[in-house]
Image (cartoon, rainbow, N blue to C red):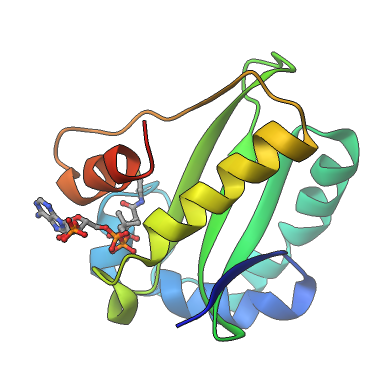
Length: 141
Ligand SMILES: CC(C)(COP(=O)(O)OP(=O)(O)OC[C@H]1O[C@@H](n2cnc3c(N)ncnc32)[C@H](O)[C@@H]1OP(=O)(O)O)[C@@H](O)C(=O)NCCC(=O)NCCS
């Protein structure tokens, strides 16, 4: 499967809402999500995603597997340190354990260092999420 990243757009909302409407996917993410996740809940955030992209405060991409939306990955800058961004991601349950997120993390790091000129990309992962820890290790963290 060919994995690529593309800046999120409004028409992605239905795919992202579907991916998030899975208890396994949501388990390790923000517990405040409604369930199932409504399309408008995702759609209403996309204007802010676009604004953040312009300001450089966050870069949200969809992960494409053979041109189909299979997940999401972002770089964001919660502490406003211009050179140090956090990476976050999730992938549709049907696509787990195929190396897709590892591939996507490598691509976003390349974007961060080459296009944004970052000094550091970091992440915080709870111990109860060994798959995510493994992704980061495989991507060189
Ligand atoms: C974490 C997540 C993004 C991983 O995505 P993925 O595309 O399946 O990741 P990859 O296939 O690239 O790598 C996963 C690795 O973890 C391993 N793994 C999976 N479950 C595991 C477990 N319970 N314990 C240890 N390793 C595990 C896989 O075997 C694989 O390693 P391998 O390639 O050496 O076999 C995905 O599970 C997900 O979306 N989870 C919900 C959202 C989330 O937790 N996001 C991160 C928040 S910190």
